[in-house]
Image (cartoon, rainbow, N blue to C red; front, side):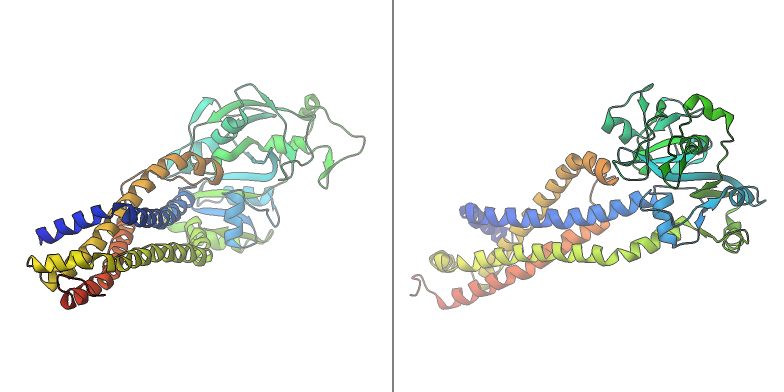
Length: 419
């Protein structure tokens, strides 16, 4: 068997140019297949770890996935807000340990603005219950102070003490609250979550911004300077959503029922894990489609390898006949051609894995910055190893065809190939 493998390796090396192109095609196909699987896995993990330690997400009655997307990932818009009194009733419930109010709807140069309380920086958790950390500065302490996520600060080149203005609405070029600038007091350390792409301000700041606005537009001829906003009651009248942590995890269903049946206004409470499962079920078809397309690309590469080996058999008939004359049996000829195809497939799979590792390291910063997906450079997981085994197994099956053809030819040919 060792002699057969050595012959297969030497034979493949003698045709290294042709088989090298086939190997590259297989490597690129394997890289695509593994990249889709890795991004799919890491994207799911990134979404799951965007918030942890939260028992319920509360908002106006709408779809659970829509509420999660808006409240946690700051995507889309809320169907309605919830009243401040309703939030206070939930926060003061005996089963509730803590509650974080969230007010969304404004932006800064394409980044979401989140109005919340200072408890947010102490209570919010991500990943494996990791706390938020400040890279520089501290939390906001008053009106018109802001804390930036790491991507906001890095992408826009901001530093502590810089002044920024917020825009009304989520449009990148929406109407600005230009008369009320904010001073940057803190910059958070990277988290790999939507926090990195968020500008954090106080709830009172959100109210102060809109004192002279009605219905999404400034009041004509009315301007309230920043130094005068303290004369007004800046307590919010409504918020977008709330994150709730319970004293005992066993109370989650009872508290969810209390909120969903709340008589003050129609509310919805969802468990983050359940809502994220619903989200992934809704995109499962896209995941399977991407994997299927990648698998087809691999099959095309393996079919090309089989075609290359078959096309070269006529040129190798003299080689095979000489091997027969030297004592090689038809079975050994079959094994040699099959082993040749498997070696090319295995080398292509290995090269694909190396390309994936290098590509993950190079693309990781871009994926975090643009898509918020944390792609870790790591050893292949069980699912990736299963895909590699499937590729090599399929390569073995594809190699049986030229192996069988060579076996048939070796039975018919003598030292001189037939015309």
